[in-house]
Image (cartoon, rainbow over the protein chains, first blue to last red):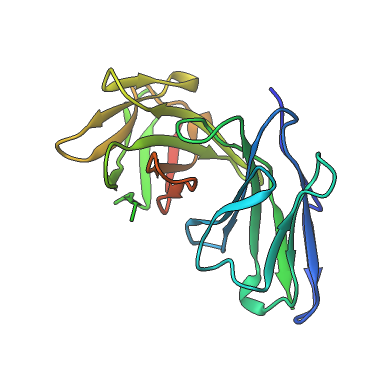
Length: 114
Length: 113
């Protein structure tokens, strides 16, 4: 089965530093997402991206966050100035369509902000 | 606003016994409902979904789920659990007018040999 790949698997950074989390969605998919899971808590929606623009975002996705699809294959999440509370597992996902289509998730990037 | 509740943090069953993981939802309109499973150090894997039609949907690894509109529930079931079914299970809902998928808090299933 095709896979969503995420790099790195672990990222450690200092508070206030910028981080970029990278994802390669499934090649023919059109919808892209970022979710995060703080340890012991539920999986939370951050943002969805379609047709080269953000289609929906949550209140978590403030000005410190941005997404980009720079080259037609990668999908990145940038956190400009990391905070301690940004420590979480970040999951990228993609789907062939919206609505009833299932999402395919990557294995995640564990971000630790020190 | 859409939301999902999984009332049980943990479910423990013996191998060979039936397994049920409960889920209730809240959404305006007709929902799209999903179950995902997460094994340690892995991403979420799709199990099954309900869109419309037959209230009983069958999915991967022998799992099935029953949509009950009057009770706004979508419980996951497996007639005979395996030790390898031990994992974290997430119910999710999507309003057809939204892009986001909203997840429940997850239920840890432990199947003992």
